[in-house]
Length: 619
Image (tube, rainbow, N blue to C red; front, side, top):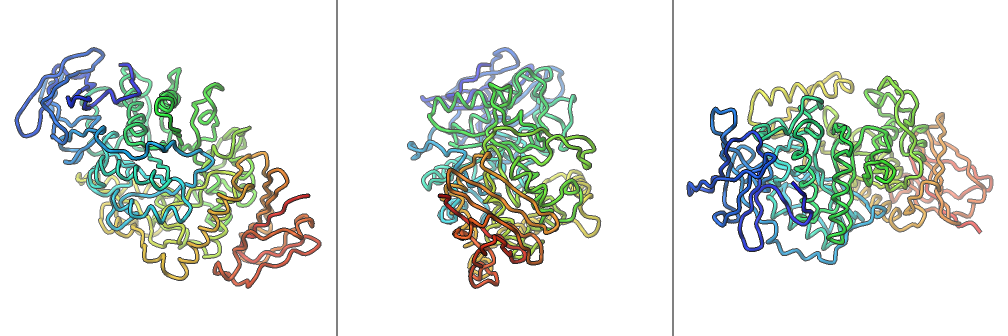
């Protein structure tokens, strides 16, 4: 099948004259019919070749329920299945599809062209726990808040249809369908349109490495999965085994749909290291090629940002240099080093990191491991990153994984002091990379973010409970794991917006606004040229100095992660420097009435768990 980037070519789609065009890949079928609504209408699809079945009809309308009736080549019972490329499943993953016409929405963002990577200040949120109502419409009521905070891009955790109404989203089983309990596809279009009206880009988290365990009927249609590889979450998706062409097209079409039909600006591709593909052209590279074609067609900028547990620059290297062409990647190693700086126990994957020494390396090199031996992995790991801009890397002090994959889902606000939270935030926003914050972090939310599901299969629920305990066994040895299936686990994980008006949390929120404004407006901090960065660690003092510059302007950011005062030496020429931020001031909940003057000898004493950011223009 030839992919036409201008429209969706699989599933049920409506033409300009209102007819339904239906295309299904089902090579395991001897016959396929579509069953329409409650009218008992059954229409046969015709074979197109290569396992595809096709029909064009005027007998199905938008919002009609429909399902496919499949007679398998092998015989046996007739199967009734929802459309694998359905956009709406009002009845959930075990029910019928709902026909949805993406082309009827009245978009008002014609002038929106997207955001440049350099300009992204990313706010990661989970639709179900971001607001009390837990849906797309409720997110829209918070957009003014996000704009005032200084956010430029909202990153939404996966919304592909999952079973029940409570899930992180990584158990999605219909990649094209927008979660019904969040409001479905129309509500998502409204949200994206509203974001663009406020100047906010939208990043959508998508999962192309596996499908969830409940409601996954894809094997009834064709070879969507392969036994060649395995993932931690089940069978690997078939990107390079026999009959993989249609599977590759399925996920390429999915990426294009989010960008074209829902006006999403960027995709965050989950755990791409678990995507196994030995094809001559990797599936990520092929998605990138089609995305670029779509960008030329629409005139809009799109980005592909990957979560990657490999220090392998092939993923972000341009295709002309034999890379996959991804626009940016998450850098967990920055987070791990930062956590160790703050006193996080060196357990599990944290055991590989040495605090400020590795944080300084990450500030300069992005990756901490660039070929040296990793004790945790028991092998040499990583390659150096050469000339890539800092905009190629996304860093954070928290995210959904690093919070939620703790046994109790504790946020940093319950693990470290108020003062240390400010130091961690400054490290992120002073880095030469793209900053991401996790919802509620900006006001030091104390409610946890725990792992939750709402499966209907009791055996699966029990398997999830056991798997959850095993997943972080290296981190925790005592205590009871919150029950992922219990609704109270989900309710505990919701943000408490009332805290934004309480003095302590209000102070942190103001501090974040100041940091974000500095990152956006100061020419040195906004410049992501990694050549203009120098970081120095003082391991015995648990301190770091980060220097960044542009032309004649220079910033020195000093971080004291220790619980004692520490003295650091800087260039005496900075005696006349301006203080851009001092986290120890009373206004930020510290104990210092005003910032200390800079001695002539350049010896600066930092308060415990504090950050001092200085700026100077050199003559």
